[in-house]
Length: 192
Length: 192
DNA sequence: AGACTAACAGACAGGTCTGTCTACTAGAAG
DNA sequence: CTTCTAGTAGACAGACCTGTCTGTTAGTCT
Image 1 (cartoon, chains in turn purple, brown, green, red):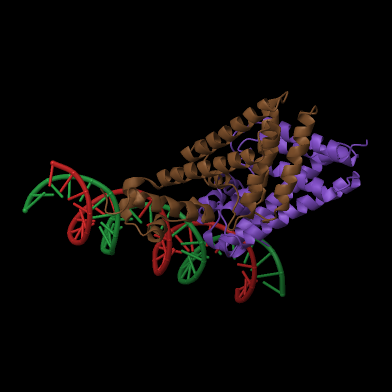
Image 2 (spheres, chains in turn green, brown, blue, orange; image 1 turned 90 degrees about the vertical axis):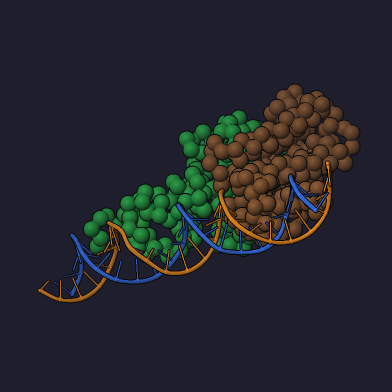
């Protein structure tokens, strides 16, 4: 169809937006900058994403996939025991904090600059709920008496690590979060 | 001196900026809006705050005072025992989440829209370090073997609650954070 | 009374941002 | 060969944003 591989223009736009939006925040990056850096015509961008908000939402979806994938991968790497997986997922936090250009939680950062009822806000809530539902499931499999509470506690630690890690790229944060998770899980599942 | 009580213009500007910056983020509020809402002349604002950044920093200082005060008050309300104070400070989190117009941690939100080396960023780091130093002191008084670690863990919970609370004004978050704090403190200070 | 100070009122310049629009190019499909 | 599609290139309008500048008003101090 197109003279370039399918979807190339759209992908280039989205990749560029991902990089720039994460580094400077969506509001800190003009559409013109995305256009210049992705080597695309303005009309092309507005064809794929009629409003800038559409591009921001697509960016958040990309972040959601990446972060959910990282969490699942870290959990899977910890073995088959749900209890170990609950601890292991915190390695995703450590990996994120250590990554060059780490700038905190993209969802929290984006939601911070969006009004309360906006689509961006809703998408952020949906993402956090999805992650927490997955953790709740793991907690239930691990035999927690109150899986919702444990999941809330663990995602609280994740959010804290993600948000606070913006400030000092200190990997100590991830360690502290992991040790906290261990302690909370031990307290919730005393019998081994 | 002035035809109105000393510092009134400056105070009105700062109060208005506090309200608007917190609700929409500093970048989401124009200087003109602050001027209009505080009923002040443009020249007056620029006399007290030569750059918008100066106003943002003054705003952060105001937030720092408010939040540090709330934490200390909540801790003091829990009694004289440092151990109880460490748990009690989480009531400040609950109070913040329940407040109308709650929009997460002002520092994290503001830092999210500021480049890495900016004064805003530095001020945010300083604030978080000050809070953590205070918590570390409490942890040491409580007899923690590793006060730095415990403080890191507890401030992680605070940050997570503050940041995550933006999304669903769910006060469950504060409860979960407090119960986590209890469990972590019990694990760190087993002998009662 | 005269000088000074803090504030008010608002025009203005220069830049940036989003979103629209026109004109052109090249490959694919019929 | 014609038509359609996806894309390039860039001008443009209208809004908004920061920061400056001119002129005026009203209290206070000497």
